[in-house]
Image 1 (cartoon, rainbow, N blue to C red):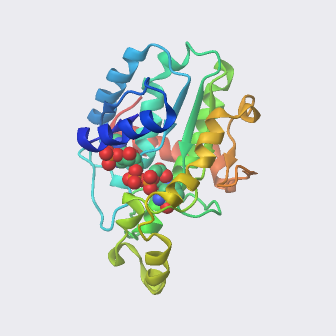
Image 2 (cartoon, protein in one colour):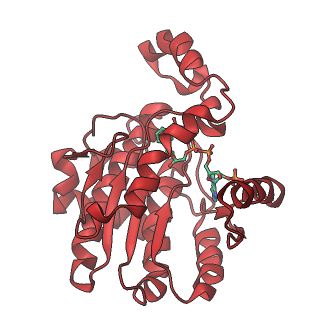
Length: 257
Ligand SMILES: NC(=O)c1ccc[n+]([C@@H]2O[C@H](COP(=O)([O-])OP(=O)(O)OC[C@H]3O[C@@H](n4cnc5c(N)ncnc54)[C@H](OP(=O)(O)O)[C@@H]3O)[C@@H](O)[C@H]2O)c1
C-alpha cells in the first residue's frame, strides 16, 4: 500500500494486518502528484521484482485551479498522468507475473462522460468537481489506450467505479469546488459525504476488491465495472484513438514515458 504520510499510512497498515490476519502488508511512501514523485515511487516498488496487480487508486479533488510542479493542471497530473506513468514504469515487474492486471479507479459521475481534448487542463474554465470528473473521463480513455497497447503482452487494464463514499477526499469538497447551480446541491452533498466511520468507504471499495480478486476478469481488458461490479460501456470518446493521442500528447509534453 502507498500513501504520502508515514503516520496515517502506518495506522492504516496496522488496522489492515489486524483485520485481515495477513502480516505481509507493506507501506511504501510516495506522492504521485508530480513526475519526480511517481518516478521515486516506481523505483521503490520495482524492488518487488514481481507485481501481479497494480491498483491506481490515489485521486485528487481540488477546489481551485492549481498546477503540479511540472506545470500541468493538478487533476490531469494526479489522476491521469500518474497512473499512466506509474504503469509504464512498473511494466518490468508486471511482465514477470502470470496474470498481470492494472486496475484504474475512476470517479465522479456513475454515467461515463465525454473527453474534451480542448479542455484537458481546464482551459475553458476551472470547474471544481466537473474538472475532477473530466480528469476521470481522461483516465478511462487512457485505460482503453493502455489495454490496447499492452494486450499482446497479456497485461490487462480495467477501470472500476467505487461509488460515493465519505472519505478525506469527498469531505474536502467545498462550496468553491461546486460550480454554478451545483452549489444548490451542497446540502445533499454534505449529507451524502457525512462522516460515517468508514462505512460507505468499505461498501464503495467492494467493486475494487472484486475486480482484483474475481476470476471473471481473468480474460477481460479495456472494460469498465460499476460500483455493483456490473460491466458498462464507457463514453464513446474513451474508445477514440484520436482522443487518446490528444491526451497523451499533452501529458507527454512535460515528459515522455
Ligand atoms: N470518495 C468518493 O466518493 C469517491 C467516489 C468515486 C471515486 N472515488 C475515487 O476513489 C479513489 C480513492 O478515493 P478516496 O475518496 O478514498 O480518497 P482519499 O480519502 O483521499 O484516499 C486516497 C488514498 O490515496 C492516498 N493518496 C492520496 N493522494 C495521494 C498522492 N498524491 N500520492 C500517493 N497517495 C495518495 C491517501 O493516503 P495519504 O493521504 O496518506 O497520502 C489515501 O490512502 C480516488 O481515485 C477517487 O477519485 C472516490
